[in-house]
Length: 109
Image (cartoon, rainbow, N blue to C red; front, side, top):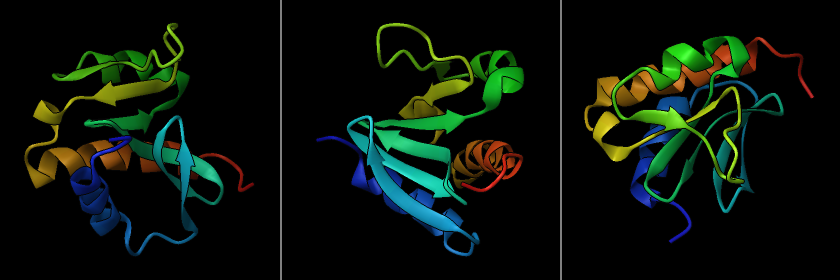
């Protein structure tokens, strides 16, 4: 399984009314893009959140979050959130909103 379809569906539900939303397969998973910029994604059972370099330290200090190290090296500004940090709708929404805030701060592509 490249990504959890259940988690992807939950994210889709949160992003259904987001202007400029698109989906793209990346990193072997599914990414959600806002105006061409990645906001979040699903890889295996993890949520991937793009928080940006300034939001990285705070994000990885949260329960169930860790640096995204897809290539073997941590990617500053990207974090994985494990399933334990996504159990409630509020937890998932909080993480997705972090990714949206960062993606919206970037110029459209």
